[in-house]
Length: 581
Image 1 (cartoon, rainbow, N blue to C red):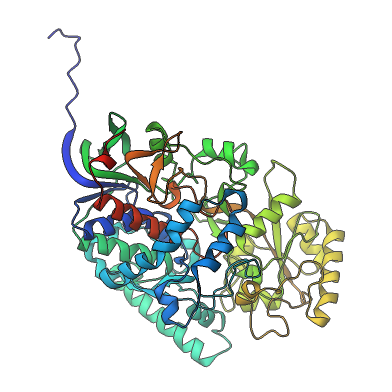
Image 2 (cartoon, rainbow, N blue to C red; image 1 turned 120 degrees about the vertical axis):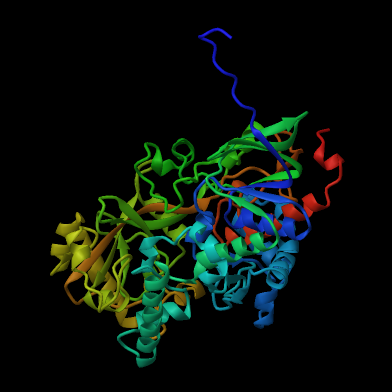
């Protein structure tokens, strides 16, 4: 060999399995668990150093109509009503094949995970659909959540579980939604709540001392942990720091992939299929520029999703002939977020789920005027913000409260009394003023507009009705309000200074515009034919909601279900299913 010749690259290591899952959120781990439980050999390849994806950062709710958990809690629902609701919500983007598959299999999937795995659920029967008055809508019973989970059950693998967003914890303590959150709101007003919170804090301090982190996992972190534990129990291999670099195709069929690892490339040959579940594209700046009208220059959107969710699954699917749905009215599940300054000079992202519904909060544009029913869903809030702002420009607004509100509920990242607010004022996160006009000047809001808006709001408080936007008028509004405020749990005056504001911008809880699939979760090509050996789940699959957001958990419910569906199909696949026509 001549001196200037380069040595040949070493051939990648080769392994075989039945199923390769790309990504380790709910969609990926559900497929892995359901496939491994059927005796298939499964490898999960996760690009990040952590397992859990966006699921581990989420609220952990799953929207699955007619599920057995809610039925056991006395909820009566029907496939027909749920289908009517989804048809109304999806409009012209209603996908009958996928919707019918979801509604038929969702209860079966939940029963499988509840009875055969470590994934255990609890009802959330009072949690309303987001549009309960729409045809087929319900005032509760379609959403469930994962039960809390003891981190000790993951053993040494706990270090590979993605931690929750620090902005959604209190000194690292994960606070469960529902009754537990109410205890923290009422800590200074109820002896029982104070005792509960004290017990949780003492337990958390003990965990920090002995384990370096909280060990009671809640919300989406509990769901991810339960799925991870179940995957390991059934013998699935879970690789981290393992990006899938390209798919292997033979005569049009997907037969494996090349996976990057710390030890070099690995050629993974699959006998049943590859499942794309890499979390959509919330951190893919190129797709965001193309599909997010408010983020044309990548300065108008702030996602709490992991930095590794850069659209790998969609790109892989496209190389095999798959198509990304680009016609939805909303390419993602929008959520208003505030940017939280961190001590290292970076910013965290706080999603505003609940505070907007509390009595005594309004949202205004820079002109000081309201534009929305603040208690509506986060997705609807952002759609109203888009409609009220300048087209194709970054959108922002301000949440306005007074001193009694801040002490009772906090605001965004600011915690209720007795946690001091001074650090958040000094950081610039929380704007304040002794009068409404002072607050407006400090926050960059039109003073006259804000004063007029507050005056109109306070006049409405006398009869407990928001004449402008109807805050508190639906079951969903009232669910997140404060039942101690009557006659409307979402309304209270804003009249006692000092006054406060937090600026909110647009973020997302996941992307809707995924790969087109059929009801078996198989990725479709340009002619609408299944691509042999290729499946999608989670946010890599085009949302069956058609770009709308009907209820709490409409990402995780279908993710769990279609992961299960993909595994079921792969377990029963014939030779014809795995070969291109």
